[in-house]
Amino acid sequence: MSSFSDFIHASPSSYHAADQVRRELLAAGFTEQDETDTWDATPGGHLLVRGGAVLAWYIPREAGPDSGFRIVGAHTDSPGLKLKSLPDAGTAGWRQAACEVYGGPILSTLFDRELRLAGRVITVDGTQHLVDTGPLLRVPNLAIHLDPKVNQGFEYDRQRHLYPVLGTGDPRETVLETVARLAGIDDDIIAHDLITCDTQAPELFGAELDLLAAPRLDNLSSVWPATTALNTAVRDGGADAQRDILVLAAFDYEEVGSGAVTGAAGPILQNVLDRTAEALGARGIDGRARMYARSSCISADAAHSVHPNFAERHDPVNRPLAGFGPALKVNAKQRYATDAESAALWHRLCSTVGAPNQVFVSGNHVPCGTTIGPITATRLGITTLDVGVPILSMHSAREMASARDVDTLAQILGTYYAGV
Image 1 (cartoon, helix red, strand yellow):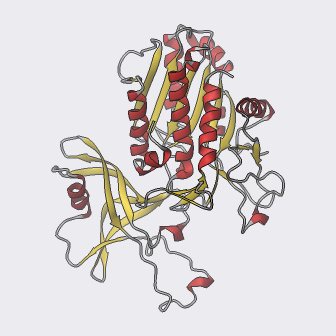
Image 2 (image 1 turned 120 degrees about the vertical axis):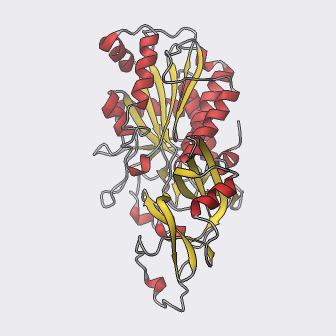
Image 3 (image 1 turned 180 degrees about the vertical axis):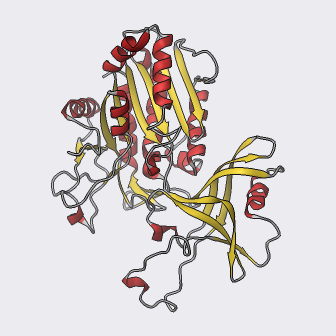
Protein backbone atom coordinates (compact mmCIF):
# COMPACT_ATOMS: atom_id res chain seq x y z
CA MET A 1 0.00 0.00 0.00
CA SER A 2 1.04 3.55 -0.63
CA SER A 3 1.48 5.82 2.39
CA PHE A 4 -1.46 8.03 3.30
CA SER A 5 0.41 11.20 2.33
CA ASP A 6 1.29 9.76 -1.08
CA PHE A 7 -2.33 8.67 -1.56
CA ILE A 8 -3.60 12.18 -0.80
CA HIS A 9 -1.15 13.90 -3.12
CA ALA A 10 -2.03 11.47 -5.94
CA SER A 11 -5.77 12.07 -5.40
CA PRO A 12 -6.51 15.75 -6.12
CA SER A 13 -10.01 14.90 -7.40
CA SER A 14 -12.64 12.24 -6.84
CA TYR A 15 -11.67 10.66 -10.17
CA HIS A 16 -8.03 10.38 -9.12
CA ALA A 17 -9.03 8.93 -5.72
CA ALA A 18 -11.18 6.26 -7.37
CA ASP A 19 -8.32 5.44 -9.73
CA GLN A 20 -5.83 5.20 -6.85
CA VAL A 21 -8.08 2.71 -5.03
CA ARG A 22 -8.43 0.78 -8.28
CA ARG A 23 -4.65 0.63 -8.71
CA GLU A 24 -4.08 -0.49 -5.12
CA LEU A 25 -6.61 -3.30 -5.37
CA LEU A 26 -5.60 -4.48 -8.84
CA ALA A 27 -2.07 -4.82 -7.48
CA ALA A 28 -3.53 -6.96 -4.66
CA GLY A 29 -5.14 -9.35 -7.15
CA PHE A 30 -8.63 -7.88 -7.56
CA THR A 31 -10.20 -8.10 -11.02
CA GLU A 32 -12.27 -5.41 -12.72
CA GLN A 33 -15.96 -6.08 -13.36
CA ASP A 34 -17.55 -4.68 -16.51
CA GLU A 35 -21.13 -3.75 -15.60
CA THR A 36 -22.32 -4.80 -19.08
CA ASP A 37 -20.97 -8.34 -18.63
CA THR A 38 -22.46 -11.29 -16.76
CA TRP A 39 -21.75 -10.82 -13.07
CA ASP A 40 -18.67 -12.61 -11.75
CA ALA A 41 -19.20 -14.12 -8.29
CA THR A 42 -16.20 -16.40 -8.21
CA PRO A 43 -14.27 -16.34 -4.92
CA GLY A 44 -11.79 -13.48 -4.76
CA GLY A 45 -11.66 -9.72 -5.16
CA HIS A 46 -13.67 -7.72 -7.69
CA LEU A 47 -14.05 -4.01 -8.36
CA LEU A 48 -15.63 -1.46 -10.63
CA VAL A 49 -14.99 2.22 -11.20
CA ARG A 50 -17.66 4.56 -12.49
CA GLY A 51 -16.55 8.17 -12.73
CA GLY A 52 -15.37 9.32 -9.31
CA ALA A 53 -16.84 6.33 -7.46
CA VAL A 54 -15.22 2.97 -6.84
CA LEU A 55 -16.88 -0.19 -5.51
CA ALA A 56 -14.82 -3.21 -4.44
CA TRP A 57 -15.95 -6.50 -2.97
CA TYR A 58 -14.30 -9.71 -1.86
CA ILE A 59 -16.17 -13.01 -2.04
CA PRO A 60 -14.85 -15.62 0.42
CA ARG A 61 -14.53 -19.24 -0.63
CA GLU A 62 -17.46 -20.27 1.59
CA ALA A 63 -19.79 -17.42 0.57
CA GLY A 64 -23.30 -18.28 -0.56
CA PRO A 65 -26.94 -17.22 -0.30
CA ASP A 66 -26.77 -17.50 3.50
CA SER A 67 -23.96 -14.92 3.71
CA GLY A 68 -24.27 -11.23 4.53
CA PHE A 69 -22.42 -8.10 3.46
CA ARG A 70 -19.89 -6.19 5.56
CA ILE A 71 -19.86 -2.75 3.99
CA VAL A 72 -17.59 0.24 4.57
CA GLY A 73 -18.87 3.39 2.88
CA ALA A 74 -16.93 6.59 2.25
CA HIS A 75 -16.80 9.38 -0.32
CA THR A 76 -14.11 10.57 -2.70
CA ASP A 77 -15.11 14.21 -3.30
CA SER A 78 -14.27 17.42 -1.41
CA PRO A 79 -15.43 21.05 -1.64
CA GLY A 80 -13.67 23.40 -4.03
CA LEU A 81 -14.08 25.49 -7.16
CA LYS A 82 -15.39 23.57 -10.17
CA LEU A 83 -14.49 24.82 -13.62
CA LYS A 84 -17.52 26.09 -15.56
CA SER A 85 -18.41 24.63 -18.95
CA LEU A 86 -17.21 27.78 -20.73
CA PRO A 87 -14.32 28.74 -18.47
CA ASP A 88 -12.62 31.62 -20.29
CA ALA A 89 -12.98 34.90 -18.42
CA GLY A 90 -10.96 38.00 -17.69
CA THR A 91 -11.03 41.51 -16.22
CA ALA A 92 -8.66 44.50 -16.48
CA GLY A 93 -6.04 42.59 -18.44
CA TRP A 94 -6.00 39.49 -16.23
CA ARG A 95 -6.71 36.01 -17.60
CA GLN A 96 -9.18 34.22 -15.32
CA ALA A 97 -10.98 30.90 -15.11
CA ALA A 98 -14.74 30.92 -14.56
CA CYS A 99 -15.62 28.60 -11.68
CA GLU A 100 -18.62 27.72 -9.57
CA VAL A 101 -18.58 26.72 -5.93
CA TYR A 102 -18.79 22.97 -5.35
CA GLY A 103 -20.07 21.89 -1.94
CA GLY A 104 -19.54 24.06 1.13
CA PRO A 105 -15.90 25.19 1.24
CA ILE A 106 -14.56 27.75 3.72
CA LEU A 107 -14.22 30.38 1.01
CA SER A 108 -11.46 32.40 2.68
CA THR A 109 -9.12 29.39 2.58
CA LEU A 110 -9.30 29.26 -1.21
CA PHE A 111 -7.51 32.60 -1.43
CA ASP A 112 -3.78 33.22 -1.78
CA ARG A 113 -2.73 29.64 -2.42
CA GLU A 114 -1.64 27.96 -5.63
CA LEU A 115 -4.36 25.67 -6.94
CA ARG A 116 -4.19 22.75 -9.33
CA LEU A 117 -7.06 21.80 -11.65
CA ALA A 118 -7.73 18.08 -11.55
CA GLY A 119 -10.37 15.61 -12.68
CA ARG A 120 -11.41 14.11 -15.98
CA VAL A 121 -11.71 15.49 -19.49
CA ILE A 122 -13.18 13.98 -22.64
CA THR A 123 -11.57 14.74 -25.98
CA VAL A 124 -13.22 15.00 -29.37
CA ASP A 125 -12.44 11.35 -30.14
CA GLY A 126 -14.46 10.27 -27.06
CA THR A 127 -11.44 9.31 -24.94
CA GLN A 128 -11.52 10.08 -21.21
CA HIS A 129 -8.33 11.35 -19.60
CA LEU A 130 -7.40 11.94 -15.95
CA VAL A 131 -5.66 15.30 -15.73
CA ASP A 132 -3.77 17.22 -13.05
CA THR A 133 -2.35 20.55 -14.15
CA GLY A 134 -0.09 21.24 -11.20
CA PRO A 135 -0.02 24.87 -9.99
CA LEU A 136 -2.19 26.83 -12.42
CA LEU A 137 -4.63 29.08 -10.58
CA ARG A 138 -4.71 31.54 -7.68
CA VAL A 139 -7.54 33.55 -6.13
CA PRO A 140 -5.85 36.75 -4.82
CA ASN A 141 -7.12 38.64 -1.79
CA LEU A 142 -7.62 42.40 -1.89
CA ALA A 143 -4.74 44.22 -0.19
CA ILE A 144 -5.53 45.58 3.28
CA HIS A 145 -4.61 49.08 2.03
CA LEU A 146 -7.59 48.92 -0.35
CA ASP A 147 -9.93 47.55 2.30
CA PRO A 148 -8.73 48.64 5.79
CA LYS A 149 -11.69 46.89 7.44
CA VAL A 150 -11.00 43.49 5.89
CA ASN A 151 -10.02 41.96 9.27
CA GLN A 152 -13.38 42.98 10.69
CA GLY A 153 -15.07 40.58 8.31
CA PHE A 154 -15.63 40.44 4.57
CA GLU A 155 -18.46 38.78 2.67
CA TYR A 156 -17.24 37.22 -0.55
CA ASP A 157 -19.39 37.57 -3.65
CA ARG A 158 -19.27 34.10 -5.15
CA GLN A 159 -19.68 35.37 -8.69
CA ARG A 160 -17.23 38.29 -8.61
CA HIS A 161 -14.57 37.35 -6.05
CA LEU A 162 -13.93 33.66 -6.72
CA TYR A 163 -12.60 33.72 -10.28
CA PRO A 164 -8.95 32.63 -10.04
CA VAL A 165 -6.25 34.16 -12.22
CA LEU A 166 -3.88 32.22 -14.49
CA GLY A 167 -2.09 34.92 -16.42
CA THR A 168 -2.04 38.43 -17.85
CA GLY A 169 -2.35 39.99 -21.29
CA ASP A 170 -4.02 38.62 -24.40
CA PRO A 171 -4.43 34.86 -24.12
CA ARG A 172 -2.59 32.78 -26.70
CA GLU A 173 -4.75 29.80 -25.80
CA THR A 174 -8.04 29.07 -24.05
CA VAL A 175 -8.21 27.69 -20.51
CA LEU A 176 -9.00 24.24 -21.87
CA GLU A 177 -6.12 24.47 -24.34
CA THR A 178 -3.86 25.29 -21.40
CA VAL A 179 -5.19 22.26 -19.51
CA ALA A 180 -4.62 20.04 -22.56
CA ARG A 181 -1.08 21.33 -23.01
CA LEU A 182 -0.18 20.82 -19.34
CA ALA A 183 -1.69 17.33 -19.41
CA GLY A 184 0.06 16.35 -22.65
CA ILE A 185 -3.19 15.89 -24.56
CA ASP A 186 -3.07 16.61 -28.29
CA ASP A 187 -6.81 16.46 -29.01
CA ASP A 188 -9.42 19.13 -28.26
CA ILE A 189 -11.25 18.87 -24.93
CA ILE A 190 -15.02 18.90 -25.48
CA ALA A 191 -16.24 18.14 -21.93
CA HIS A 192 -14.75 18.16 -18.46
CA ASP A 193 -15.23 17.65 -14.73
CA LEU A 194 -12.39 19.66 -13.20
CA ILE A 195 -12.06 20.97 -9.66
CA THR A 196 -9.42 22.91 -7.74
CA CYS A 197 -7.15 21.39 -5.12
CA ASP A 198 -4.32 22.82 -3.03
CA THR A 199 -0.94 22.11 -4.59
CA GLN A 200 1.03 21.88 -1.34
CA ALA A 201 1.92 18.33 -0.39
CA PRO A 202 0.72 16.89 2.93
CA GLU A 203 2.97 17.85 5.84
CA LEU A 204 3.53 16.34 9.28
CA PHE A 205 4.02 18.98 11.95
CA GLY A 206 3.82 19.59 15.69
CA ALA A 207 5.96 18.81 18.72
CA GLU A 208 5.95 15.09 17.90
CA LEU A 209 5.41 15.40 14.13
CA ASP A 210 2.17 13.46 14.51
CA LEU A 211 -0.24 16.12 13.23
CA LEU A 212 -1.04 16.07 9.52
CA ALA A 213 -1.97 19.08 7.39
CA ALA A 214 -3.33 18.22 3.95
CA PRO A 215 -6.08 18.92 1.46
CA ARG A 216 -9.11 16.60 1.17
CA LEU A 217 -8.83 14.88 4.56
CA ASP A 218 -12.61 15.02 4.32
CA ASN A 219 -12.86 12.32 3.17
CA LEU A 220 -9.65 10.66 2.06
CA SER A 221 -9.07 10.07 5.78
CA SER A 222 -11.71 7.35 5.37
CA VAL A 223 -11.07 6.16 1.81
CA TRP A 224 -7.44 5.24 2.45
CA PRO A 225 -8.04 3.39 5.76
CA ALA A 226 -10.93 1.46 4.18
CA THR A 227 -8.78 0.45 1.21
CA THR A 228 -5.92 -0.51 3.52
CA ALA A 229 -8.28 -2.54 5.73
CA LEU A 230 -9.73 -4.47 2.79
CA ASN A 231 -6.28 -5.13 1.38
CA THR A 232 -5.02 -6.33 4.77
CA ALA A 233 -8.02 -8.63 5.35
CA VAL A 234 -7.43 -10.29 1.99
CA ARG A 235 -3.67 -10.57 2.40
CA ASP A 236 -3.79 -11.93 5.97
CA GLY A 237 -6.58 -14.43 5.37
CA GLY A 238 -9.25 -12.73 7.47
CA ALA A 239 -11.42 -12.28 4.39
CA ASP A 240 -11.68 -16.05 3.90
CA ALA A 241 -12.06 -16.86 7.60
CA GLN A 242 -15.82 -16.12 7.47
CA ARG A 243 -18.67 -16.22 4.98
CA ASP A 244 -19.64 -12.56 4.62
CA ILE A 245 -18.88 -10.62 1.45
CA LEU A 246 -16.60 -7.65 2.16
CA VAL A 247 -17.58 -4.43 0.39
CA LEU A 248 -15.90 -1.04 -0.01
CA ALA A 249 -18.18 1.66 -1.44
CA ALA A 250 -16.45 4.98 -2.08
CA PHE A 251 -19.08 7.29 -3.57
CA ASP A 252 -18.81 10.63 -5.34
CA TYR A 253 -20.94 13.80 -4.89
CA GLU A 254 -21.44 13.48 -1.13
CA GLU A 255 -20.56 17.15 -0.67
CA VAL A 256 -23.56 18.18 -2.78
CA GLY A 257 -26.11 15.76 -1.34
CA SER A 258 -25.24 12.40 -2.95
CA GLY A 259 -28.03 12.69 -5.54
CA ALA A 260 -26.12 11.38 -8.56
CA VAL A 261 -25.53 8.19 -10.50
CA THR A 262 -22.28 7.72 -8.59
CA GLY A 263 -23.60 9.12 -5.30
CA ALA A 264 -24.83 7.21 -2.27
CA ALA A 265 -28.43 8.08 -3.18
CA GLY A 266 -27.94 6.49 -6.59
CA PRO A 267 -28.23 2.79 -7.49
CA ILE A 268 -24.56 1.81 -7.72
CA LEU A 269 -24.18 0.07 -4.32
CA GLN A 270 -27.53 -1.70 -4.48
CA ASN A 271 -26.72 -2.93 -7.99
CA VAL A 272 -23.45 -4.47 -6.76
CA LEU A 273 -25.13 -6.11 -3.76
CA ASP A 274 -28.13 -7.40 -5.68
CA ARG A 275 -26.13 -8.78 -8.59
CA THR A 276 -23.67 -10.44 -6.22
CA ALA A 277 -26.50 -11.93 -4.17
CA GLU A 278 -28.22 -13.23 -7.29
CA ALA A 279 -25.00 -14.73 -8.65
CA LEU A 280 -24.44 -16.48 -5.30
CA GLY A 281 -27.86 -18.11 -5.46
CA ALA A 282 -30.03 -15.73 -3.42
CA ARG A 283 -33.09 -15.82 -5.63
CA GLY A 284 -35.63 -13.04 -5.88
CA ILE A 285 -36.60 -10.32 -3.44
CA ASP A 286 -36.77 -12.70 -0.48
CA GLY A 287 -33.27 -14.10 -1.02
CA ARG A 288 -31.73 -10.64 -1.30
CA ALA A 289 -33.68 -9.31 1.69
CA ARG A 290 -32.41 -12.18 3.81
CA MET A 291 -28.82 -11.34 2.87
CA TYR A 292 -29.45 -7.67 3.70
CA ALA A 293 -30.82 -8.69 7.09
CA ARG A 294 -27.48 -10.38 7.86
CA SER A 295 -25.52 -7.29 6.78
CA SER A 296 -24.07 -4.18 8.36
CA CYS A 297 -22.49 -0.96 7.16
CA ILE A 298 -19.86 1.38 8.62
CA SER A 299 -20.23 4.81 7.08
CA ALA A 300 -16.81 6.43 7.47
CA ASP A 301 -16.56 10.20 7.09
CA ALA A 302 -14.47 12.81 8.87
CA ALA A 303 -15.69 13.96 12.29
CA HIS A 304 -15.23 17.27 14.14
CA SER A 305 -12.43 17.33 16.70
CA VAL A 306 -13.03 19.71 19.60
CA HIS A 307 -11.50 23.06 18.60
CA PRO A 308 -9.21 24.65 21.21
CA ASN A 309 -10.18 28.21 20.24
CA PHE A 310 -13.90 27.54 19.88
CA ALA A 311 -14.57 24.90 22.54
CA GLU A 312 -17.95 26.48 23.29
CA ARG A 313 -19.19 25.34 19.87
CA HIS A 314 -18.98 21.71 21.00
CA ASP A 315 -20.91 19.59 23.48
CA PRO A 316 -18.93 19.68 26.75
CA VAL A 317 -18.89 15.88 27.09
CA ASN A 318 -19.55 14.24 23.72
CA ARG A 319 -16.63 15.79 21.88
CA PRO A 320 -13.64 13.85 20.46
CA LEU A 321 -10.04 15.03 20.47
CA ALA A 322 -7.67 14.46 17.56
CA GLY A 323 -5.02 11.88 18.43
CA PHE A 324 -7.28 9.75 20.61
CA GLY A 325 -8.87 7.56 17.97
CA PRO A 326 -11.77 7.73 15.50
CA ALA A 327 -15.12 8.98 16.76
CA LEU A 328 -18.56 7.39 16.70
CA LYS A 329 -21.01 9.97 15.29
CA VAL A 330 -24.49 10.14 16.83
CA ASN A 331 -27.45 12.43 16.16
CA ALA A 332 -31.00 12.25 17.52
CA LYS A 333 -32.42 13.48 14.20
CA GLN A 334 -30.63 10.67 12.34
CA ARG A 335 -28.32 13.03 10.52
CA TYR A 336 -25.98 10.17 11.36
CA ALA A 337 -27.29 6.60 11.14
CA THR A 338 -25.86 5.31 14.43
CA ASP A 339 -28.31 3.68 16.86
CA ALA A 340 -27.76 1.54 19.96
CA GLU A 341 -27.42 -1.68 17.96
CA SER A 342 -24.80 -0.31 15.58
CA ALA A 343 -23.03 1.59 18.39
CA ALA A 344 -22.59 -1.72 20.22
CA LEU A 345 -20.86 -3.13 17.12
CA TRP A 346 -18.46 -0.18 17.15
CA HIS A 347 -17.74 -0.69 20.87
CA ARG A 348 -16.84 -4.32 20.20
CA LEU A 349 -14.51 -3.40 17.33
CA CYS A 350 -12.71 -0.73 19.37
CA SER A 351 -12.36 -3.10 22.30
CA THR A 352 -10.91 -5.82 20.09
CA VAL A 353 -8.08 -3.61 18.81
CA GLY A 354 -7.62 -1.74 22.09
CA ALA A 355 -8.63 1.59 20.59
CA PRO A 356 -10.20 4.47 22.53
CA ASN A 357 -13.92 4.85 21.92
CA GLN A 358 -14.66 8.53 21.36
CA VAL A 359 -18.10 9.92 20.56
CA PHE A 360 -19.21 13.00 18.66
CA VAL A 361 -22.65 14.44 19.37
CA SER A 362 -23.19 18.04 18.32
CA GLY A 363 -24.23 20.62 20.88
CA ASN A 364 -27.92 21.47 20.90
CA HIS A 365 -27.03 25.03 19.89
CA VAL A 366 -25.00 24.01 16.80
CA PRO A 367 -26.47 21.83 14.03
CA CYS A 368 -24.35 19.04 12.58
CA GLY A 369 -23.82 17.99 9.00
CA THR A 370 -24.78 14.64 7.56
CA THR A 371 -23.17 11.96 5.44
CA ILE A 372 -23.88 8.83 3.42
CA GLY A 373 -24.84 6.71 6.44
CA PRO A 374 -28.54 7.69 6.68
CA ILE A 375 -28.87 7.38 2.89
CA THR A 376 -27.50 3.83 2.85
CA ALA A 377 -29.60 2.84 5.86
CA THR A 378 -32.76 4.29 4.32
CA ARG A 379 -32.22 2.87 0.83
CA LEU A 380 -31.21 -0.64 1.87
CA GLY A 381 -32.52 -1.15 5.42
CA ILE A 382 -29.08 -2.32 6.55
CA THR A 383 -27.90 -1.67 10.11
CA THR A 384 -25.52 1.29 9.79
CA LEU A 385 -23.24 3.36 11.99
CA ASP A 386 -21.36 6.59 11.32
CA VAL A 387 -17.72 7.10 12.34
CA GLY A 388 -14.82 9.31 11.35
CA VAL A 389 -11.35 10.58 12.08
CA PRO A 390 -11.62 13.80 14.18
CA ILE A 391 -10.24 16.73 12.19
CA LEU A 392 -9.97 20.50 12.44
CA SER A 393 -10.60 23.03 9.64
CA MET A 394 -13.17 20.78 7.97
CA HIS A 395 -13.97 22.07 4.47
CA SER A 396 -10.90 24.27 4.44
CA ALA A 397 -8.65 24.01 1.41
CA ARG A 398 -6.19 22.47 3.89
CA GLU A 399 -7.43 20.48 6.87
CA MET A 400 -5.63 18.87 9.81
CA ALA A 401 -5.82 15.60 11.71
CA SER A 402 -3.73 13.24 13.79
CA ALA A 403 -1.90 10.71 11.63
CA ARG A 404 -2.36 8.17 14.43
CA ASP A 405 -6.14 8.31 14.09
CA VAL A 406 -5.98 7.40 10.40
CA ASP A 407 -3.92 4.30 11.20
CA THR A 408 -6.26 3.37 14.05
CA LEU A 409 -9.29 3.60 11.78
CA ALA A 410 -7.58 1.27 9.31
CA GLN A 411 -6.99 -1.18 12.16
CA ILE A 412 -10.61 -1.09 13.30
CA LEU A 413 -12.01 -1.47 9.80
CA GLY A 414 -9.63 -4.38 9.21
CA THR A 415 -11.03 -6.08 12.31
CA TYR A 416 -14.57 -5.49 11.03
CA TYR A 417 -13.69 -7.02 7.67
CA ALA A 418 -12.06 -10.00 9.41
CA GLY A 419 -15.41 -10.94 10.92
CA VAL A 420 -15.27 -9.74 14.53
